[in-house]
Length: 156
Image (cartoon, rainbow, N blue to C red):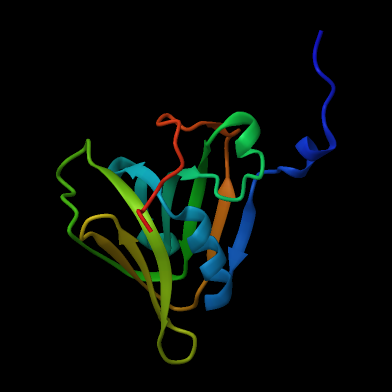
């Protein structure tokens, strides 16, 4: 026999967020902090002016962590209007490299242009020159138990 669903269980839903301003991007940045991804899940489609990451995102927004433990979810982080991509501190020749995303910020330029900076753990970074800020974050799988069984801790 199954247990009855609780009212609280109905509140959690997959994220589907967009950012067209720096303030919006701060929210997305906080939700992707500590996301991990293999380098093979990073793609830039120059013809579409789109850069995407398929992340294993820690569910910071999850209020049910006390009930079921820490969770992660696969999510797409997509940046549109991308003109150029540059990276540093990433060995793109290593197909087994796992990267950890720490923050996503926007440095505004003139007339809505600017740079989206993805700061990685260690000294890595990805810089996207954009014509306009347009970022989306969308969960694409059901949550799963975090393999470590722990909440990320930065020793703060």
